[in-house]
Amino acid sequence: MENEISILIVEDEEIWIEQLHHILTEFGYTVTKTVSNVEDALVALSGDEYDLVLLDINLNGKKSGIELAKIINKLYVKPFIFLTASLNHQMKDAAATGPSAYLTKPVNPASLYVAIQNAINNFSNNKTGSVKEDDDFSSFFVKQGARYKKIDWAEVAYLSAGKNYTSVFNAADKTEYYIRSSLQKILQYQVPKHLQKQFVQVNRSEAVKLSFIQEVTNDELKTAFKSFVISDTYSKELKNKLNILS
Image 1 (tube, one colour):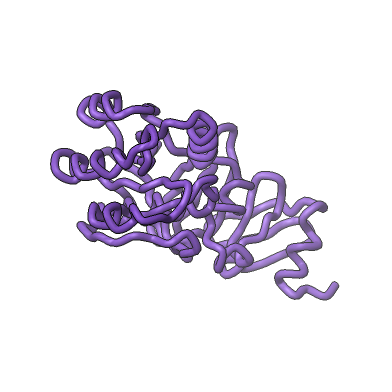
Image 2 (cartoon, rainbow, N blue to C red; image 1 turned 120 degrees about the vertical axis):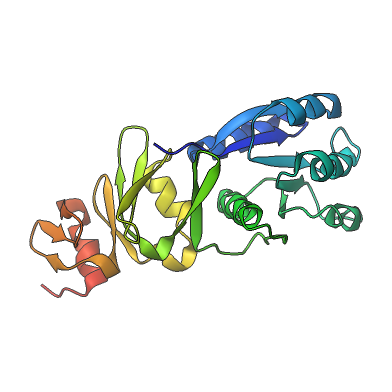
């Protein structure tokens, strides 16, 4: 089983903390800790294990988030994403710290997911650069020990939901990887928009990428890797996507 990417939240408003915590856990990330002031943030930055920081620019009504970003760059060398209620005159100072992204509150779930994946990608490849809220991202990362494994959505053949995880089958290495998220959340938010129509759900717990389908009968679908039962509920949509006329 893969490790989960862990995230430290530095935010002083409870409503946003609750929103972020909910979205992150739904996507299968681990929230290491949430802190609401500079003092606690400094302790958490130095003492907790985390892969990325979500950082409010205006912490306690001040731009202390920018000062914390400078400390992260100097001492901890971790990717971070700025959170802000509005894009204002402070953005020039914020940009100088090299954040992976800026997200406005309330945070859009898809934008947050893309921003995190982009941050991990750049960090893994020693790159800098930020992602915009409307950017799409064609790959994702799973954590394996101390490294991050990149998986291209174009190579994902199917998704299978389990009790607490969804397995993602990567055709490139013929391996299943696990995301602690529901099938519906993955299809709605984590599969990039330009690829969402290429996945079709065949039963309550499984979805298949159209390009990997080799054969379809009345109640079964076959790929080179696995066969799937087609339930009546999803049969019509499958036939429409495959242009089956009868």
